[in-house]
Image (cartoon, rainbow, N blue to C red; front, side):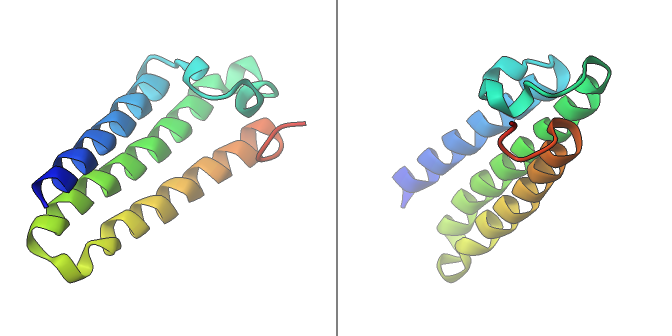
Length: 105
């Protein structure tokens, strides 16, 4: 139980840090190149913000899942589900809006 908590907290923190780097530092190189190759230069700040927020939401969902595993064993899946659905929705919207498609072509 404690090992799972530590792993989930570490993975969540890693996603949060990556999201902050993409958002604040605009390190799009953390993403695969086909995700941002069609993004126009003037749209990079908005794209980086949306992608960063999506990664942060996923990271928070994973980290909160660790806490749920400690106290609410039956509901451990709720925060990770919410985090992935909301975070992935933000990422997909950013991809379609700024890159033209999810995978870029």
